[in-house]
Structure formats: C-alpha cells, structure tokens
Amino acid sequence: MIALTDLAKVMKALSDPTRLHIVQMLSTSEMCACDILESFEISQPTLSYHMKNLMENQIVTGRKEGTWMKYAINPIVISEVIKYFQNIDTSEPIEIGCVKCGGLD
Image (cartoon, rainbow, N blue to C red):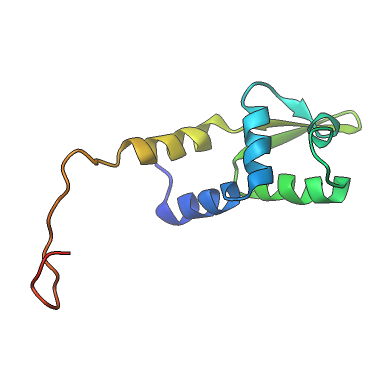
C-alpha cells in the first residue's frame, strides 16, 4: 500500500493537464519521447520536465533503447491510486458532531 504522503505527491503530479494527457497516451502502449512530443505544442525541454516529474513520482517508467527513451505506465502506482478511490465509502454519510460547538457539520 502506498503511503498517503507519496499518494499526495502522485496526485499533485497528475494535477497538470499535460501530464494527465501523457499518462492517458501511455495507457495504451509504451511510447518514445519523440512520439509523445508530436501530440503537444511544447518544446522538447518542456516535455523532459514533465517526464522527469512523472518518473520521479514513479507514475511512469523509462528505458533507453539506443539513443531513444521509451516510456511506459507504472501499473503498480496507477493501481494504488485506483484502489485509494475505490476504498472511499460514500454509501452512507456519517454524521459527526463538531468538537467545538457540539453541533453537526
């Protein structure tokens, strides 16, 4: 199970629309950085910044193939994020009284 502090970092990394789009692209297959770059109107250094962020948070893995870098989703981290939300029980709201005023929030 992923620690909440690490999960928060993953969610922060995923809060960027470009990084979300990259994750969506990688959900179907491993991709070369040059192929990812073609889908955006950003520079190569900007893509490198986003990929570094995704890799530092272990959302994406990378491997060198010759002179190219191939990226793929890290299924373990993605599964942990999915499990976190699946374990939130919204079926019955719990009424908890306010500690300060004694009333219900």
